[in-house]
Length: 244
Image 1 (cartoon, helix red, strand yellow):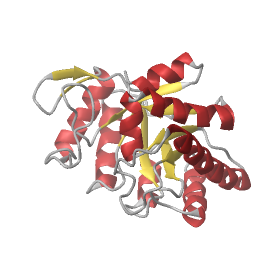
Image 2 (cartoon, one colour):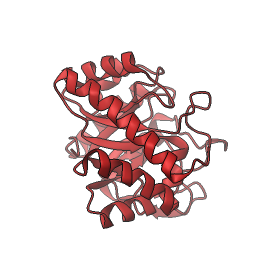
Image 3 (cartoon, helix red, strand yellow):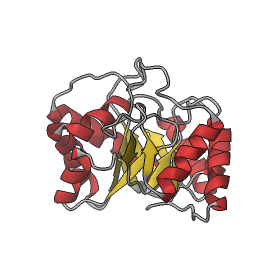
Image 4 (spheres, helix red, strand yellow):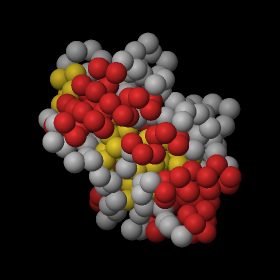
């Protein structure tokens, strides 16, 4: 199982998270980050042998990329392509490369169920480098469309987020959408890694088949959550390694 975190966003303690994760989804300047933060985050990831991904988003710094902007598909393609190219330039200068792409916030949620949005992101990947992996929501439109176009695609699940009965993320506007209790996060992480089944927000059991687990860097106590989850995975006999 891979353990990833969204980093380079100017929140949380990226340096403390890096030794605990195997993949780093680095903000590319749209919802957060800039050339300097990308360079610094890439350097820390390289020093820890962590796989690097482009964390692309709507150009919405004010809303941290978590507001739906309803951008047209062509604009989304251009935005995503520009962002991954920006991170690519940084990684190349550092002697490494971008290994995968993961959308952020509202874009992530929109492409999970909207084919036009999923196709827009996929078009950006294919234009940039068709060998680039996509990390996205399992059993989503995005996963289906990416596979149909021959992309490498991997499912992601969140240890620190609540899910609906339809295996979608509970909106952050609802109380309890972000899970901060150490025991609850650990329990969900282990269930996802061992059985692929968890209890949804309404109490029903749902199935989520994932290759990577995410802990958000801006979740309160993120470093401790990552530390405890990684230890629990090891205790359960689950190898933690990057998916790329």
